[in-house]
Each structure stands twice: as structure tokens, then as C-alpha cells.
Amino acid sequence: MVWIEPGVFNMGTALSHQEQNDSHDRPFTMVLSQGFWLGKYPVTKAQWQAITEDVAQVSTCLNCPVGNVDWYQSLSFCEKLNDLFTKALPLGYKFNLPTEAQWEYACKAGMSSLDIDIDLLSEMAWHKGNSEGSIHPVGEKKPNAWGLYDMLGNISEWCFDFPAYYPSGSVVDWVGNGDNALRSLRGLPWSASPDKPENRCISRNYAEPDLQTPYVGFRLALTSAVVDYDGKPCE
Image (cartoon, rainbow, N blue to C red; front, side):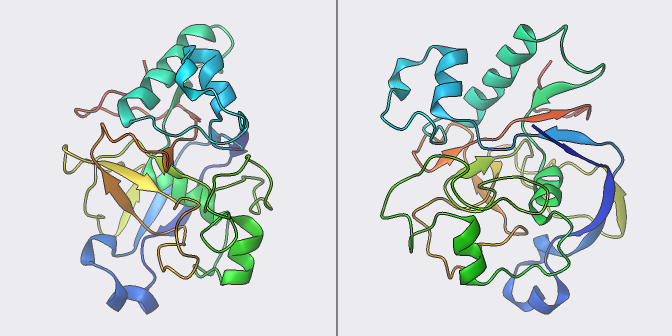
């Protein structure tokens, strides 16, 4: 896992893109008061099988990101890890899904520009233009500036949040607490067109929490954040 320092960043759609997006993506100042660890790669099929003993994920590509897991199963995976490694985890930290803010902050990795041209995207991500119609093993593309792989492309990733409109002004440790029928997704899968505007760290997607599809997986976060609304964090 990669340690992500606490920090402040502009979350959401840049003003130059405002006309292309709904108001729920309006920019605000996000303050992450605590650092956290984030998986260097998405969780792989081999890792999933090792913890869950789910033989349905048997594949010739065990080092590919696991898919066909819903939001609840992803959290259950976190809980299993917390049970297994209770005594080894840093004090106050537990495995969970990253929040939208944590994911976007880590994806941007200090970038001031939010646009990624197709050439740069192709160096960092598997997409429809270079994937040959298939998911790929993690870590085969270049990492971002903070050493994280496959943040854009290869697979979409569950986040902890319930979809919500962004707040205004400056907010500390914001977590989306909105439509409880959906959960947040970040990143696009290997099947997505590389020229989609959604191929950016700021882009948001949503799905029902019981969605199981080969295009959606998850990445582990190890965080001390406490979530106190009706969405069960890892305990």
C-alpha cells in the first residue's frame, strides 16, 4: 500500500469545464485532515481468492483486478482483513473502501491540470483503444506521480460514499451522504473509449450497491476516518 499524506486540494469540476457538467460536481476546497494508505493496485483475483476462498474467480489472469463483486462484498472483504490483521494494523486504522475524496486526491497526485490527453492516458491506463477487449494484469502501465497504478482504466472501483451533491466553500473530511439507493464509483474500465471526458480523476459514476459486473472492482484503503451515517464502515 502507498502512504498518502494529508492535504488540501480543489475537488470537483474545474471552472473551465463547468458548462460540461452538472452542478453536483461544482468545485470546493477539500481538506483531508488525516493521512491514509491506499492500495498500490486494485485488489486482484488472487488476493480475493486467498481471503474469501471464492473459487468462482479462478482465472488464467489471477493478477488481474477482481470483478463481479458488489459494494457489500467489497466491504465484507475489508472486514475479513480487519479480523485477520487486528493486531498488526496501525493504531486507529482499519481497512475500508476509499471515500470519493480520498480516491480523487490520490488519483490527482498533486496534478494542477485535470485534463489527460489520449497519449498520456494510454501510458497510464487500459482502455478501449489499447486493451484489445480484455482486462489486464495490474501494474503493467505507468503509475501516477504518487506510485499508484491503474487509477484510470482497467477497472472501475467502488468508493464508500453514497452519491451526494458537493458542498460549497471549504470542508474538512467530507464524505458523500446522499442517495442511499446508490454507491459511488470512480475510474473507467478497459472497455471505455479513451476520448470520453469521464477519463479524468474528477469524474463521478454511480451504481446500485448489489451490482456485479466484470467491469467493477475495488481498491483497499487503510484509514482512520470514521463514518457515522447509515452505511456500515469496516469495524
